[in-house]
Image (cartoon, rainbow, N blue to C red; front, side):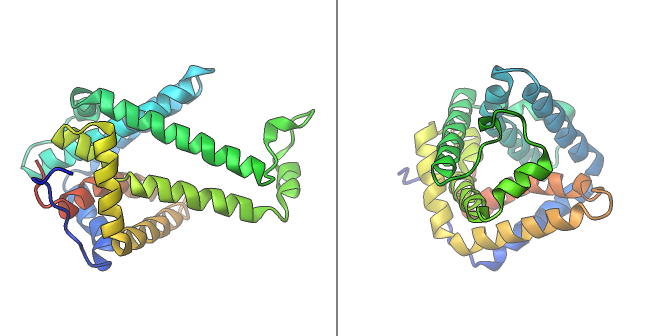
Length: 238
């Protein structure tokens, strides 16, 4: 561990406060943040429709984009204006380590999916014909606990590595070093991380009620909050 970096141990209530701080930054430049997040989603969805390699590339690049969000939030906090080019700022900050992080996250998702299949989760492509949504829901009856297990494992992995993209972007860390620091910070602030996750989930659920218009606010808040959390947990941000 790098002795020049310190991890603050925050109270659980600070987890929800990260979203409040994120909203303050969003409110100062709503159109800019909506544009950044819209660009991210368009690129990601565009990659996902490319056969074979598109989904892999999309997963590899997610930490790069979240590093870009952290850099944009840092610049905004320093009084600078957000521009559309900030969406690609992460590509200029230790990109190889960020892409490696994306690859490891994808590998973790594959392992979790394989575990769910071993536990008995029916896979949509395992039938002789393609199942309709209604048929697949019927097949899933009694196996909801497998979905819950997979969701919980995914949340644990994502939460443990939540701080890794800004650590790589701001401190020039390698992938493994950033993962170790992120895991240590998440464990040290477990209460704040849990409350943050629950508050974010509640916001997403509320956002989809009025024709999903609330997502125009909640998605940018999520993007900004990754930097807010990093800034509070790590006492010596670059």
